[in-house]
Structure formats: C-alpha cells, structure tokens
Image 1 (tube, rainbow, N blue to C red):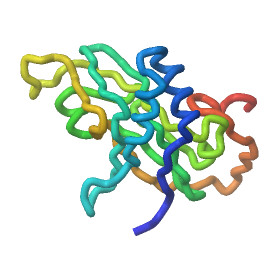
Image 2 (image 1 turned 60 degrees about the horizontal axis):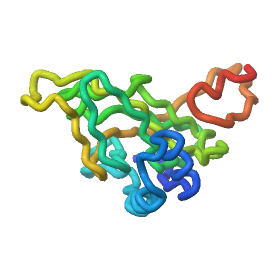
Image 3 (image 1 turned 90 degrees about the vertical axis):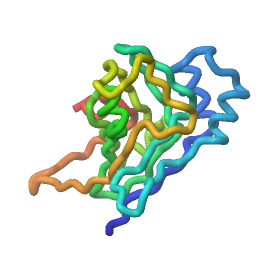
Length: 178
C-alpha cells in the first residue's frame, strides 16, 4: 500500500466564486455556504476500493444529452510522482451512460498551488439511458451522492525530461506558453 495524497476543501470564497461563475444566481449565498459546510471529502467505500468517491455538492438533474460542470469544492494535495485520475462512477456510466466530457480527468500534483486553490471540477454529460433504466429518462443525482471516483496513480519520467514550466490554472493550462 502506498500513500500518495490528501483531499481538502477549497476555501468558502473559492467555492462561492466557482458556484456563482458556473450556475449564476441559481443558488443563494446561504445555500452555497450550507453546501460548503456539508461537503463530504472523497473517500473509499470499502477497504478494497481503489477509487475515492466524489460527492455532488448540489442536486443534479439532467435530461438525455445534457451536460453539467460541477465545482466539487475539493482539492488534492498529491505527492511528487503521482497524479489523480478522475472517472465516472461505474454504475452511473453503465446504467445511464453518464460520462466525463474529457473521458478521464487528469489532476497533476502541481495543480494544488494554482490561483483557484486547485479546485477540482467535473464536466459531465448524461448521454442517455442505458438498457437498465426504467421509464424516467431523467438522471437524478441527490446532493451528497457519489457521482465520480478518483484514483491516485504513479507515473514515470523519461531520462531526458527537462520540464521547467510552472502551472497556474486548470483545463488546458499546461500548454500555455510552451
């Protein structure tokens, strides 16, 4: 067993800014504060689980073909030589074809120090019901329910690696200035 990181909440101001930027006026300051207070940090469901479940900070309802960007309120302090891979929960993917838009979220160790505190977002789409879904085609994920899982994964470097750039940002930030 290897230990590779730790989950933390982002600050309330960072979470509030992300929620307002993502959802506009859908949630009041009070609702945002309550959601932040009640955020559950990712955790494994069983002793043998490899993935850490991420939990929805707000209720999610999607019709087939709809997508959503989810500010999780979570950041990950990751040890050097590791990255965090984010995947949809198996049951949601299998039953509902609920998927991450980038297929696998890659959270690098240096994202933790970004201006947004390393806030992990998930951009997901409900592609449509699979063969195991009943008549209701709307996907409902309750506030506090697991919707994504993440696994700490080691990586290696080439012998001639000489990366020196410093990250500041999320989606697509590592190729800026390269």
